[in-house]
Amino acid sequence: MVTDPAARPSAWRALAAATALNLPLGSLYAFSVFLKPLEALLGVGRGDLALVFAIAAGGFGLGMNVAPYLYGYASAAALVLGCTVFSTLGIALAASAGGLVQLAIGYGILFGAGGGAAYILPQQAVNLALTRRHGLANGYCVSLYPLGAMIAAPLFGWGVREFGVRETLGALAVALAITGALSAWLIAGCGITLSTSATATPAADERRRPVFWRLSLVFFLAASAGLMVLSQAAGIIAAYGGATALAVYGTTFIAATIATARLGGGWMVDWLTIPMVAAGAHTVALTGNVALTLWPGPVVSVMALALVGLGYGIISGLTAAAVGVYWRRELYGLMASRVYLAWCAAAIVLPITAGRLFDLTQSYATAILISGAGNVVGIVVALGLPRERAPRAEDR
View 1 (tube, rainbow, N blue to C red):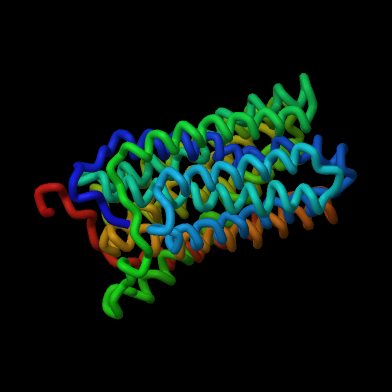
View 2 (view 1 turned 135 degrees about the vertical axis):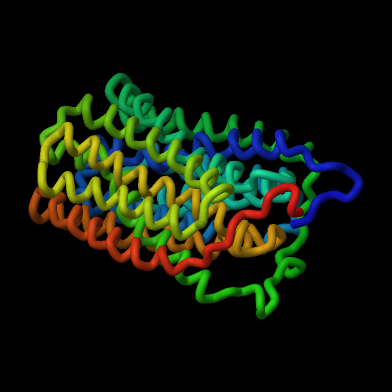
């Protein structure tokens, strides 16, 4: 991806396009609100719905990694519209699903793939349009998903209660179509021109494979815990004795915590070393897992899950910013899409395991212990990351 030499890129339009596109797609993180209604409607188990979320994560990873290879074959606006069509059609299929297979195809494959491509495309545009504070901007971009979930969770809870789960998903499909069209209009005027990824292939000395794998592992371990929380927060709170209202608003609070943490994680990379921030984030998440293990209860579960989400959010913002530190900005979309595969793997491993364990034991205690063990490993791995800092504007 390159900028148009005839025009100065518009940073505000790039950020606005990212906001319009990714904010409603962040409803992916409010999936836990649909758990009980879908279980009752389709006659499926918690593990089955965890599998749907995992398929969505796989589709997300596919969309992210395919998107950079489409640059140059269509305009940025056309690609945004393509993402919109995929995600809207996916939710429409999910709204009319009569069984698990159609739900998995709609919500998992189509919505996931559209969301993945939509996630990486505006991030690349933002990194090329901005000349300073890339860490803060990247933190903002990745905070849009949990921010969208914070808005969506209470709306979904109200919609399911007043109208039903099908009608609520149908309303989401309409919202995705409208905001996607708005994003396409914004990005069309931001002055960014796409080129094929072949023009931004990393040289042998730029691949930095040890850094890539260490950063991916740090992200995977944090995301495993965070995505278990995001995909099943309402169910976890209910399992620890929380009422329906506490489960819904607790999910909203957790999503808000993650959104704030993602913004903060990106901002901290502008000022602090990456291993310091990453190790501290895993420590915060570990504190939440230990607290819930020692003092199980409905209120403690909300606060503990918020701490796990806080650690995950910081790591998410840090990861987005770290890609801009460890690799040149022309490689941002390519390298970020590869690192974000750790997110997809995390969404498959622990959320499915937690769902299956709940079906067997009606408890999340073992899953919380696994999550905490991952945080311990994450602290150790994070301390080995390079101590490079984000370049200041005056250094460019």
